[in-house]
Each structure stands twice: as structure tokens, then as C-alpha cells.
Length: 133
Image (cartoon, rainbow, N blue to C red; front, top):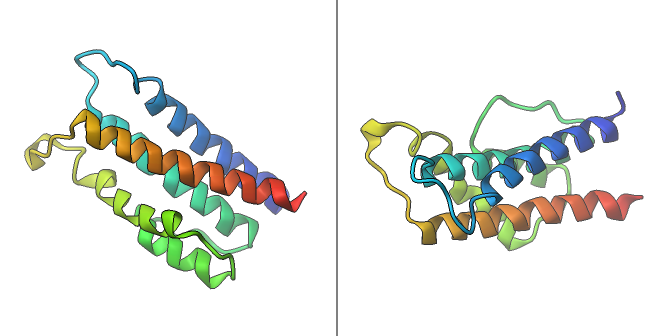
């Protein structure tokens, strides 16, 4: 598989994560937790950014740290907008909010803010690839 095809495959998985969470942006069943939806959005951002690394031929580290992935992307020479760099804050949704012992509850307002960030990152990466071809 070519680098671009593999990168686009990763981006399509990121889109799936985004769509899972987006499906509940208007309303959600009581048993669905915003914490779980924010995990999907963190995964969207992580996979979107890792798709850039794949395209550039950089070996992907097994990490959920969006900040680390952003540092790796910047080392490739890709210029990221501030909004993408600021998405590093979503790393907290990869672990801290996923277990009940952490007792961290996410409000709908927070969820919608995370959704907006994830959409921005996904769209920016998609547009980056579209601009190449």
C-alpha cells in the first residue's frame, strides 16, 4: 500500500470516530456518556494527525499523546495552524475520562467544544491531503 493510500485509510478511520461522536451532538441516550464520546473525538484527532506522519514516512509511535504527535508532525516541516496545535489538550480524553475511578464528568458544553476542535483538525488534515492532488 502506498504512503498516501495508507494515510487516507487512517483518515477514514478518524472520520468514523468523528461520526460516532457527532451522531449524538443534538441528543443522546441517557446511557451514553459524554466521556466516551470525547474519547472517540480524541481518537479522531490522534488518527488524523498520525495520517500526516504516515504520509511523510515517519514511523508511528504507540502513544495517545496528541502533543507528542504534533511535535512529530512539525518536525516533518508541515506548518500547523494554532487551532491544530491547541488540540493537544484533547489528550486528557484518551485515558483520564475513561474510567469511573477518576470521577471526571463531562458536560454537554464541554463535549460540544471538543467536537468543534476535532472537526477542525479532521477537516484541516483532509484539506491538506486534498491540496496535494
